[in-house]
Image 1: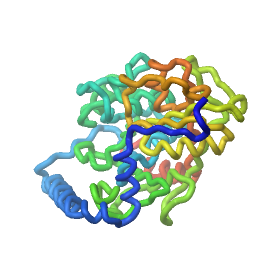
Image 2 (image 1 turned 180 degrees about the vertical axis):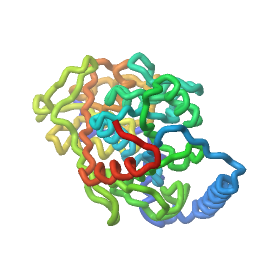
Image 3 (image 1 turned 180 degrees about the horizontal axis):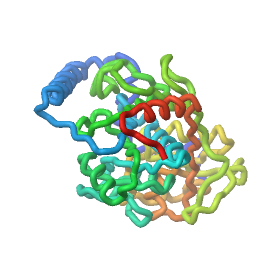
Image 4 (image 1 turned 90 degrees about the horizontal axis):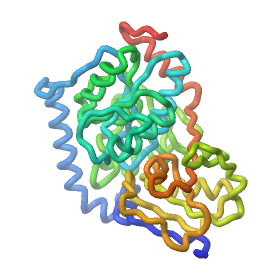
Length: 341
C-alpha cells in the first residue's frame, strides 16, 4: 500500500510558474520585459475595437460574461453554473456559450448528454450535465451564441463561460471572478497572472475563495458535498470513506486546493495525482498499487469515467452570497428591452 501522503504530478512547470506569480521574485523579474510587450499588444487590440477596425457583434438577448483577469483558474465555472441555476429558478430560459478550451474539435456544436467531453470541452460538458441548460461551443463565441438562439429560439439570456477578453461578443453584464490569490504580484502575463490590468471596469466582482485577497465585491461559500457520485449517478456518503486510504486525482488549475478540501472532510489521501488542467486522459492509466478508491472532481469525472468507471466524483457546492444575486437581478432588469419571465 502506498505510504500516507504519496503524491505524483505531471504539471511541475505550471506549478512553479503559478508560485512565481505570487511575488515579484527573480523569475517574475526576468519575465517582466515580455509582460510589457504583452500589455502593449493587448492595448493595441483594445484600440482597434474602440476605433471600429475590429468589430464587436451583439445578439438580440442580454449576454452575461463570467470570466477572470487572472490566469490559472479562479473558479469561474462554478459561478457560471450558479448563475444559470439562479436564472432558471426565476423561470428565465438561459443558454451558455463557451470556446470549449482543450477540445479536439474546431467547429461550432452543441454539448449534449451524449457528447464526448473531448469534443466539446470538459467544462461545457460539466455545465450541461449539472444544469441541463443548452450549451454551445465555438472558437468565436458569437457563432456559438447565434447557433444557440437558432436551435433554442426561446432563450432569454445567454451566459458566456469565460470571455472577458473575447471582445468580439458584445455583452451587457460582466462578472469578474477572483480566488484567494487576488491579483497575485500585480504584473501582466507572463511575469504575473494578470491577463489585463486591474482595476478594470466590470459590473460585478465575486470572490470565489474563502479568504478574499482584497476588499470590494461579493463573497461566496464553497465546500465539498458530503457525498461522492458514481458513474451511474448514485451517491456514496463520504463518511463511508473516512479513515480509509483513498487515491485523489485532480486535473484542474489548482489541484492542491481539491486535495486540501478532501482532507478537510476527513479523508485519508494515500496518494495524490495532480495532472495538467483540461487533461484528456487518453494516455492515462490507473497507477498500479494505488491506495483505495479513486476520488476526483466532477470536472475530471466527465472524462475519467470513460477510463475508470469506478472512480468517485465529489461535487463542489458553490453558493454566492444572496446579495450577489440581488445585484445581478437588478442589473438584468435595468437593461433596455429586457423582460423577465
